[in-house]
Amino acid sequence: MTVKEIMTRSVISVRREDTLQDVARLLTDFRISGLPVTDGQNRVVGMITEGDLIRFARNRQIPIVLDMLGNGVYVNYEPPTSLEEQIASATTLKVSEVMTKKVMTVSPDTPVEEAAQLMVNRKVKRVPVVDSEGQLVGIVSRGDIVRSVMAF
Image (spheres, rainbow, N blue to C red):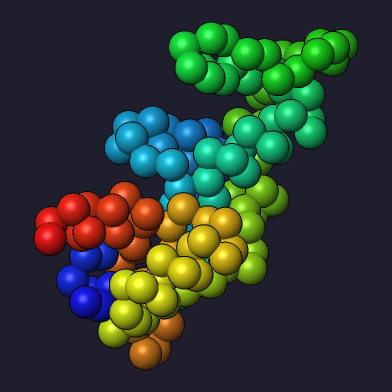
């Protein structure tokens, strides 16, 4: 079985110049946990995930409430003096300032087992699928792999 048989073809992506607020809205609205970042030719130049946003917020001491097992856990421990200003500036920051730049990709013809091993080895939850010209054609997630295994 190959990646093209199980990948999600309708991929929501963002550009480097989009804001973190745009990203947060897409992640929430579509109930996904990560997005490929593409350039003007639809080539993958990065990834941005919920984890990236949470790490960014923690490093900037912006309060984020995480719902872990139903319990609210506050990430920031000491509120900064200009909290409102930090939150306002954070929402206008660009994807390029937070995204992961080194992204592993697979081709549509990559065996599912190879994609799964890549995810395990690299500790990632999704991998963009690109064609021979490097253009984004899909995304394969751990969930896609689990669903494909359960179909048999």
